[in-house]
Image (cartoon, rainbow, N blue to C red; front, side, top):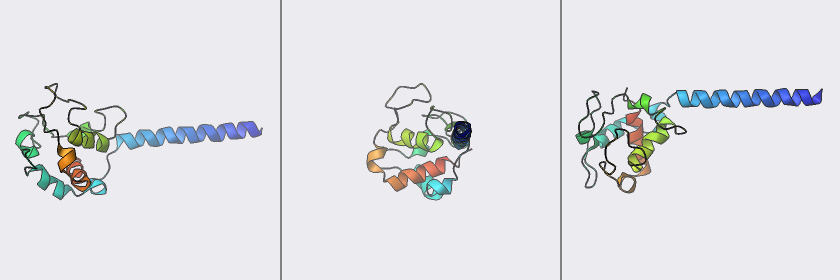
Length: 135
């Protein structure tokens, strides 16, 4: 009898954990919980170091490719782009390790490779927050 009780508790906890993991992957965090979207937008539109502004290569308001893939709708696509990564993790990785996953099948190395070195953690959080606003 005691065994059945513990087994049922174990199964319920396991199911609850699975449900919370699934819902965590299916919903996006509020951009404000990640960083400052307005500051991220300013960074997105301003050259950093010896890199062009992100907006030089990426459109955000149309699905057309410029020099790099459009980021229109990236907030939603980022949730399932790479299995095991949340939207925030995927976007962060795309900024600091741009060749970790090449979304548009272009040659590696096209995107500036040193944002992780020249941007602060806060700036990266702000950029991610801004990208989460792009639907």
